[in-house]
Amino acid sequence: MFVFAAAVPALLVVVVGYVAGHAVAAWICAVLGVEAQRPPEVAGWVTGLVLLAVVVRVLVQRWRRSAAEKWGHQK
Image 1 (tube, rainbow, N blue to C red):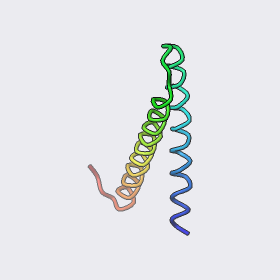
Image 2: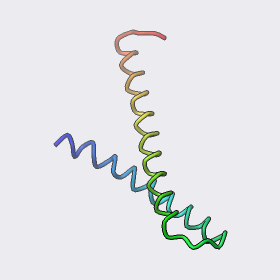
Image 3: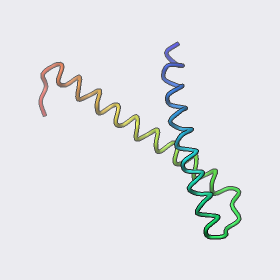
Image 4: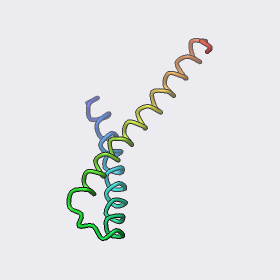
């Protein structure tokens, strides 16, 4: 059950990043007049994975900070 609790939000973040990256890349290709089949998809996946990495990093930093405050540790 824990796998689903962690995987569903992670997949949602990747999908949101994918949609945003794909839309921006498709728009840029349309503005430049480039025939775009592959670039928007690649840009979408990269954007989704980068967004996931950013979200995980922020959550880990918040978790570490709260754990340090809980145990009284200071930087």
